[in-house]
Every structure is written in structure tokens, then in C-alpha cells.
Length: 265
Image 1 (tube, rainbow, N blue to C red):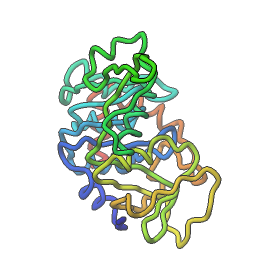
Image 2 (image 1 turned 180 degrees about the horizontal axis):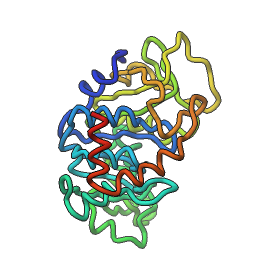
Image 3 (image 1 turned 135 degrees about the vertical axis):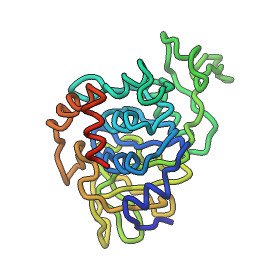
Image 4 (image 1 turned 60 degrees about the vertical axis):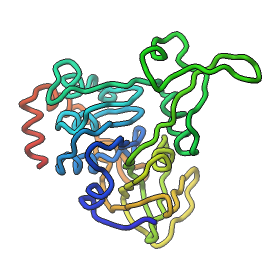
């Protein structure tokens, strides 16, 4: 049953050291402020999971929160590389970072399998890549009906999931719309979940294409207006393109990043 809480308490209660955790969002509704709070609280040894890790995970990796990254694409969208990510992989600063790489389809199917309570998912994918031989969570199976050889990916079960949404009601039912990504699947795949929202309302009004997470699948809800910045929340804010460009300069050197980190704390 969802409990309304503060951001600090929500992160403290849901995201724990050593977790396999996802701060999910695709293009918009990225839970940046929750990621900042995890940095403030000094989370460590996290396995960070996300289809498209961008600046939010660059910050968390640079702050020493992560020991492993499970992902399908990484970059500063529209700008270039993630420099804290690269520094961790290439030079082990501030700590070595283990990588587990998948395709978008593979990651989405892994989330869906876990959300459905299944041990694995089957898809046509990974053909022509060497990921099958390099990644333990990818195997091949033979269809018992046709004999076709297919890719199989293990369910992506999470200890914790954090997402951002437009609104929740006072019972903790959550509603979000726009590009909905895999936020629903991440929450359903997790043992514990936190949803940050732009606002709490008395009643959720229907919105075309909206997804509603019922209160019994959400653990904590925190009101964090602007919690997706510098990404956006459709209908509430716009993307701060300048902030993504500014991050490129901040993240290029350990010294500049450390100054940013000091200001965050």
C-alpha cells in the first residue's frame, strides 16, 4: 500500500546499499531529483539498471554510488559522451564499474518477464552480435513447436525501482502519460518502489494514453515538483536543453564534477 512521504525518507526507505535498482524514465519523467537524493545519502555498491542511462547515472557513477551498470545505451542525449561513466570504465575513478550490455528489446523483455512473474523472456534478437557469448543473462533456446533458435533473456528482478510521474491521488494511485517507457514494468519487477510526482490531487482525471499504477503496487509516493529536471514531465514542464550541454562541461574533469558534487551536498 502506497504511503505518502518526503523525498529524503522515500529514498532512505526504498533504495538500500547493495541494491539492484532502476531509476527509470525514457526521454521525460526521469527521476533526477531522486537520483540526487541517493547521492546525498551516500548510497554505495548499487547495480544500476536502465535502458538508457544518461546524465542521472553519470552523476551517480561519478559520486561513487555504483559498482555495476546494466543497460542498452548510454550517453548525454543530443550532446555526446557520459564522461563520469567513461572515467569509471577506463580508469576506475572513483571506483571500477562492471558492465552488462543488452539491446533495447532485450532490456524491455527482461523487465516484462520480471513484472509478469516469469523466469525469462524469448525474443528474436542479438543476431550478429557477440553479446550471447559474453553475457550470462542471454542464452539461446529452441522453440519446441518450430525448431527455431531464439534468444532468451533472464527476468530482470529488482530490489528497488524509482520513477517520476505527473500525479498521484491521496490513496497513492499514480498516473503518468506521454512517453511511458518501461516505468510500469520496473515498478512491478521491484521488491520496493518509490514514485516521485509533480502533484497530489483529490481525483485522477482520465488522460488519453495514461498509465495508472494502483496504490497496492507502489510503496512510497513523494511530491517533488520539477523532480524530472533537466528532463521534463509532459504537461508540466519542458526539457532544459541548456542543462544537458552544461553537464558536458561539468563532467569532463574530476575537479569540475567534484565542485558540482560539493554544491549538491
